[in-house]
Length: 405
Image 1 (cartoon, helix red, strand yellow):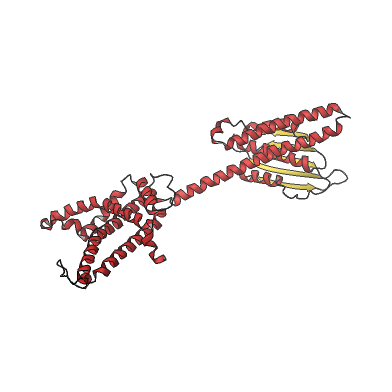
Image 2: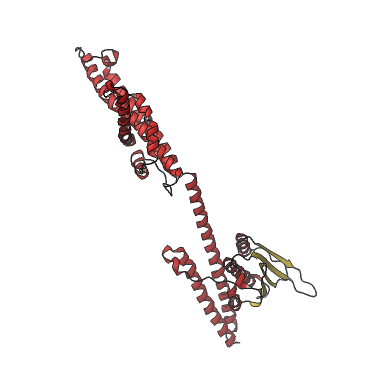
């Protein structure tokens, strides 16, 4: 049954139409070739339009003209609709790479379509002639026409046989061109590289937004949990402190909502211009006040000389480090040192009587390291064991290039 599939498939006959269109494309070039042929052979008549040498001679002309024709989208539409080819169109049709590939496709369409159109025009009437002659031979009638022999005598078999062979030839040609379509009409290596770069940039943006959400909202929720728990415990014993804690909860929650709105706004194409300014090192004082951690903040150097991207990422790094202090430190207090010298050095130290153990699902230090690596910086964390003179300390150190202010 698979052998008969090309006979029943609509794709075969749509491909046949596509090949006949190729023959129509080849016709003007054949007429030009026939004019040149008849110039040198005036007695040839219509022979020039059918001569195989003329057909071969006009192929280079077809290839040259194909580079100038604005037919790329027409060829792609015909290939998709009639051949059933599937491919993505190139991002830029004006490149030389796209033009020569579609030029090759046009030339193949004209050459293959012209050849099979000629075979179709000649073979279909001949098959009808064979059928008639075969029927006359069966009825013992005298043959008509100039050609008499075994081919017309067996015309009831040879006629359909040749017609079937033509159908299978058309199906094979259409399948071959369908296989070539993605390479010649679709995206080339440069287009795929550009698409890969765009996808990489999109994924990087998604990862950045995920970090933004993790850092800002995660930090805010940690502050809300700690402050609300403290307020609930001390609401009767120290109502003034409880009121301050709840006020801090409200302020932190409002800030988190603003951050969340800004990040989600970045995901909406129609709200790109609505995204508010992002916080940077200039906002460290407000971060320390709202973090829920007792922060000893020291800033040295010229923050104005730090690049905007570095400043924003350094702020996020300090925010993430303070969130980790709030969640994991022995006491909610930390010393934060930011030095904007030849590079931006950040150090966040918190009390730790023992070396902290990695926690399942924790991504705080990983996120800090990723942010530093993206900017070409380094991040490390180390634990100093307690001594008689000093308690144990967990310190996160980050070094970032200053970037362009």
